[in-house]
Length: 381
Image (cartoon, rainbow, N blue to C red; front, side, top):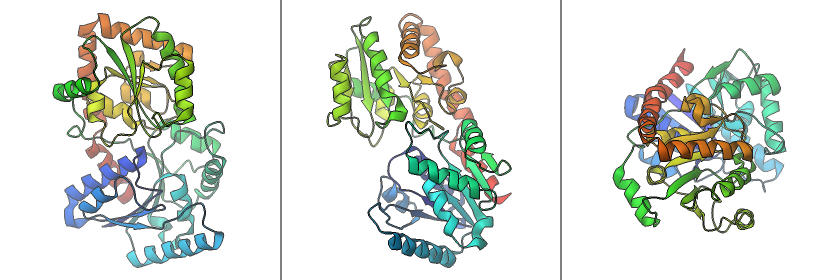
């Protein structure tokens, strides 16, 4: 079986990580019975070398915004020729721009084409207009172009069917999958993280993992945290992700204005978050919008609890309403942070049971094997 995946890039991100895990699992399971090719719109990326090591071929269209219209036409013709030559059994595109470009592949491949949507919703206040426009165009064409449309959350299905005109008879739900061998609890890694960052045994460490964007609702989180610090002298917020650094002037300004400079630590973007998840006491997610927040599942596999907004399918992942906030404004974040810290400090048996159940919840319901098998069923049947 020959599968072509089309994705915007292979940089470090949720969709890219999920594609990497899927390809890695299928290569290991099916070996020479499966041939995987990845077409990227933008060349290079975090996962590229690792995928090549698995004998996965990568072909890039090398697009960028500075290119002129005729250049794009040439690239689309190049993609059409490439797909014709490869004659794949399955074409799986990922995210809006990649779905959009498949509108221009030869029509004979529409019956082998599957779209993947990774956002729960698009809103004008934190989504680009071009992205919203592309999604709506794809929605209008979805009635007759792809065979199926794969989503990773129920919220995503409801939004796109009801607001962006996507076909209601082609929707399929496939949750993300994770390896319990890659993410796991480790006392050694916890100790390493805390020694490295000069963390005292009595300190309470809240973690944030995500890129800097409006969608992540970072200012409300920082404001709520600034209020919490007045009640706890030994509490700190460790932040990791793209543009989470001292070079981010907007972020630094917010932290300084809230007088929490000594309470917030920036760890920049990390290649591997295993030590981070183990080192913190619990993870905080305050996003306005997510589809399937990978950091929630990854943290829980490390037996690190998560307090999350009700974004995407966070409620299904966490499976504990006490740790899912109904609202994600600063007052709700403050209220829920106080509740969580209270359990952590004064109800140790309950907290330790929670840590154990976090890992079991992901292992049971969100394994790579479940995800990979569900993709294969969608492609074949």
